Length: 540
Image 1 (cartoon, rainbow, N blue to C red):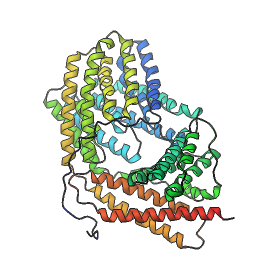
Image 2: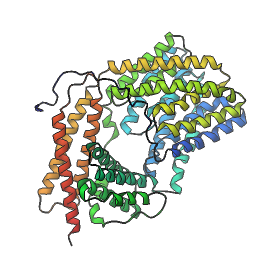
Image 3: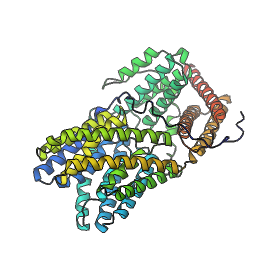
Image 4: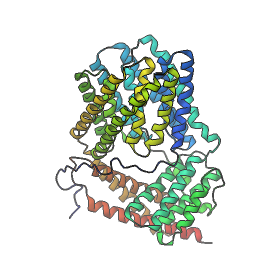
């Protein structure tokens, strides 16, 4: 089969998976941190409003408090910027919703505004790679605010509440840095070491891809961590050890790699390994201009179009059925959209199952929540914790807690009849999932294939540069290390692009043979750069 042309073959429709969609995975190493953080961020504002008898304002403080869910895997220097951006984005989305609600009572117009805002939030969250929970929480708040009774005079005060709670959430997110300032970098480095150890023991293609991605993630974490302290330099050396294990797995010591990873837990000293000659090129990478996130917006246009169309149609369908809260259908549709249609289908199944089980949980706990405002607040806090504790295992499991929490939040403004709430939530879930997935199939994403082609070209350029430097008798200090990391990053991007495009419907056949050749050649060159680097470091 020739790969002379970028794409060959005809359009293909892929089988949608069911097996494994609901399978539970391993929880995140720090699953308890976002779970505890959101409780600490939500509790004080809600308890203050409870004491003041103004729980009807809780929706606005919740908007800011939920920002505590973000950026837990980022180093604190990068986390400060990311959390600030999330708070501002949350308040901006809330502001659009409140202003629209105060200017018009047309449900069709409000749904349209909500769909457009959801598309913008999806594109921005993907472009900035903000990470879980992504745009869904932002869309939930902005969409709900569209249907909150509002006047223009009330908007500034409500936004001030959200901003104040957001500032508290920022402090909650940054507080762990006082006790473990290098925690995210240590975890990322430990993950890279463990992944390299797993590959050294079991040299399968999947393990190789996972290990290279973990090493690349560790470098990205370290390069975004701010000033290069001695602790950070020691962590960089350990990531180099993981790279060496990937280049020569037969010579690696998995037990030593795992022992280093274990020593990174807690606040003990970072294991010391080699000298700084192995870190040449890091300064050059730090000095290089950072890539601008807005350059990623173009390739995300089809996903944004899917989000806008799916959310709008889901909201319109809910209105046609006479449901009083069309934003539930809108948010359900918004929550589906992933990197491709196949992943979107899986998320749809998980969303429907989680929501249907979640309404049963709500039916069981609503008598307890109706004992009084304090019981309502405590139930919401418990579901906040449960949602974040379980979400990492599988989306549907976390949704079992998200659904009753969202239903209970509607009770902050006043008593709601449980039977009607349950019926509306079930209908809106089914409508949003069905209409949202139909929109995903209708809006094709040919750019997924283009991304693979661009990634192939990037790998070939990075490999050629690394090979050229290897051929030089005395390459510039640090240049080979920089080329090595650029090639590693290009290979990871290629694999991510291929996996995304492989799950896309109506996609022309991918150049699989060319991809395999590029990955094989790239990994051989990558191994050669690491061996050359090690040999240079060993010379007296």
